[in-house]
Amino acid sequence: MDWSSASQRWSSIGGNLAAEIELMIGRGVLPVGEKLPAERELAEKLGVSRTTLREALLALELRGFVSRRPGRGTIVLAAEPADAGAGRSVLTEARATLGQTMELRSVVEPGIAALAAARGDAAGVDRLEAILAEAAGTVSATRLAELDVDFHTQVAAMSGNDLLVDLMGQVSDWAGSSRRLGFASRERTATSLAGHDAILAAIRAGDADAARAAMAEHIGSILALVDAQSSETI
Image (tube, rainbow, N blue to C red; front, side, top):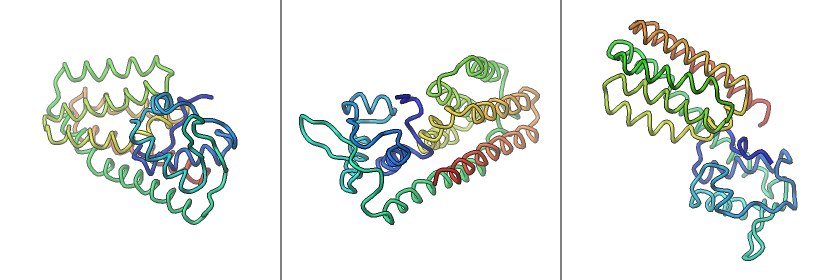
């Protein structure tokens, strides 16, 4: 199984991770009767803490998706929730979390990019170029997601505002699973890299207005892809 795409579109808090695994079960990625990897291994493959994984598995067990028994491991029991209404509620809540995160990004990050263009220096531009150069030669969805975080964090650092850097760190936590799954898509990867190129060009030129517009367009294009994926799978 390709566990590099074993995350879905939401942040990896326990309830949202449960929704991710639920979708995997519903799609047959995790067939009924399959035994999941050991807890430590599964947490590493999904890129979450063992505490988060335990919360997710408990939620799934309570809803009848999996069975957990000492010495036997975790077994997939069903592809449909015992309470379909409850299943829809979890998915809706998880998607809303991503929607709110992207809305926050669309409000905040264009301004951050504008500040980066106005205040950034050559060293900061060099770091952005290095991040994009590595991303262009990387096929790992996990690494691409990490580099995406690095890029946006570096843009925030170039704003010269430590509070904005801290905020972007929190946003990255909220958007973690979305990034990991997203970069398993060639379309998402190409769209993201093109957006980063445009943002970098504006920052390199010191054009605050162009940087603001490039970041707004970048986030809008990513949100459009996320919405398209959501309509296809939910």
